[in-house]
Amino acid sequence: MGIELTLISRSYCHLCHDMAVALEPLAEEFGATVTVVDVDKDPALEARYDEWVPVLLHGDMELCHYHLDVAKTREYLAGIR
Image 1: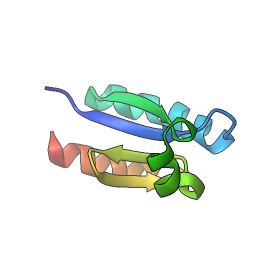
Image 2: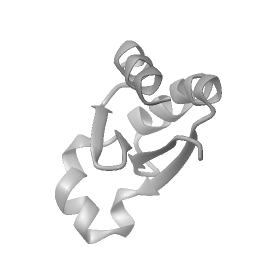
Image 3: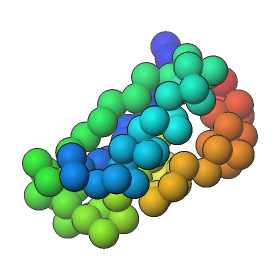
Image 4: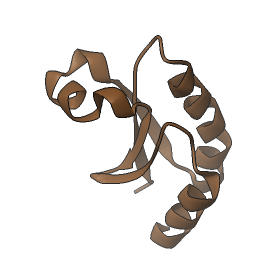
């Protein structure tokens, strides 16, 4: 079973778009699947993450928000491989 990441995002957020683009090579490197979830379509997610988007999650573990922390995310993904 591969690594499944979730990117909490919103359609008009430039930081969200930037994180999604920056995440692509890292996801490919680790064979991870990234599911993008629109925070504005889920009231519970909006209540939790509204001002924090984009947020990168592995399960309930928050890996980073606002900007992709490549070093931290790479280290985390290498540790769960």
